[in-house]
Length: 620
Ligand code: C2E
Ligand code: CA
Ligand code: CA
Image 1 (cartoon, rainbow, N blue to C red):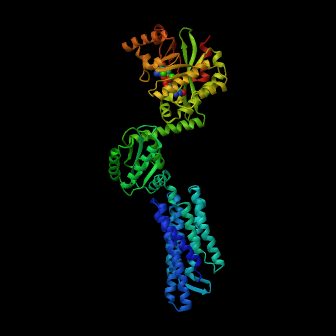
Image 2 (image 1 turned 135 degrees about the vertical axis):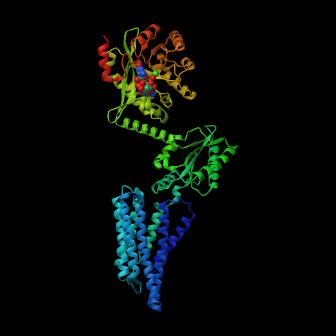
Image 3 (image 1 turned 90 degrees about the vertical axis):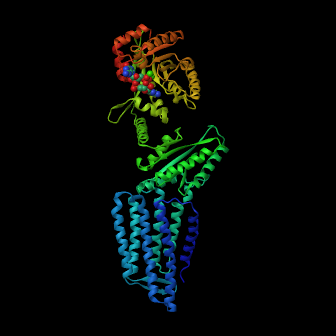
């Protein structure tokens, strides 16, 4: 009997069935459909073999022709189901979009009509040695439909190839292509019964390329990976299934904890999570886990369980931090989920609950992130300059560089909105470099120097010195643009972090040796203290706008400022008063002995070209 190939296919699928059974499963739509297609393929092979056996017995041993026809019919009906499964599977990536809904409905109706036709139409069979087939209107109907589904699937996959991940597309083509080729060969050479085997081969391709869950398993812990979480959540969002989840992060009490401690903490946590229940557990970072639940109540209950366990662990020096998401609908999709997790993963709260305020904050921050990214890319980072008046010399000898971002519509965003975010997310590094580069370009023209400007003060954040070769960008630009280092003054502010302070000092010393000078910015605000004033090798100290304004409204501030002027001058430091807005204020500062004055009284921050015009008008 001509059933060797089919038996091979069946054996192959059985082996894979065992493998699939052993896998840890992630129940997403894709997978359910794959399992369905796999099952249909097995049943189809069994009936393929059964129909050949029946035909053989009917032809040679007088077996019931009616039962034989029934088995043949059932077999070809399964073939159509298989074709339909392939179509559905291909649709998954594109199905969520409205554009293919009607196609799916149409395909379903066609499928139903086809199956009914196969049931009612007559079928017959033929056998001669190794040549065996069924024929008649029902068989014709099957061929037409199966081929239609294959071609249609290929067509759809091609048409919407942008919506389907590349790897998926290739696997789909291989699967459907194998089928089509086998059907053609079988049609031409009647004794080569390839279709069943090709379908089985297709399943194996699909499994190894797309549905192999081992790809989604983390080797150390046996948990699902971050990619798997991404798929899983995407599936939930696609089918509008709300969910709740929490993440847990291991925080080592000693940041330099050894590898052994880390490994121990990770494997023990993984085990604890697995014991909690049957919900999938994901490892989404070196020391972060995530468990997804259908309801917030369940998630919260389990969160409390695992927290109690974590709190009870005393023999490894770690603690656990949790982020709890009661409702997935607060976030727009998978990307936002990950954004949220990353935004708050360093939170110090033992349980941080996601609420609308936090989501808004995150959206604001990611809006700013994009603003800065795009501005850097499209060169919309601009530097404005505010002239600084030298009281003794009665002219402008300096200017402060202040960054602006130009929106696409030309409006400006002020640094107060984006600098704090940039400092948090690290964009301050590229942004600071861009600003400094522009300042250097401006200085390199030599125009400022001709108009009596001795230096440009540029704001730098301490984070810009938290770098392997931090002073590097300053040094590099000074050399590239061939600028006198004495034209560079950097404004720095207080930092509470001792390590940063150490790095900052180290770099300041390097740059000071080159000739660069420093100013202590924001003096008189929460961002400055006396220790800072004492320990920083700065040449200038800048009285903050609020401090300057306080001089006119607050007795204590007035006395402090007087004292500070004396101290600074004793230490050979110069003082800049910011935020001077009127003639009276300027005169008061002059009487107080302030060396430099900056403020709207003279000029707001203006673009470089306007600064040149301004200086031409004011300097003799
Ligand atoms: P800052 O260093 O204290 O800069 C002075 C701020 O006071 C500027 O605001 C300036 O426009 C404003 N100002 C100047 N004179 C007056 C005045 O008479 N009255 C009033 N009400 N305000 C005055 P701006 O440009 O919005 O900058 C805000 C802050 O952003 C700066 O404060 C600085 O800390 C930061 N920043 C600006 N550019 C950069 C930069 O390139 N890098 C870094 N790291 N920070 C920057
Ligand atoms: Ca400043
Ligand atoms: Ca300031």
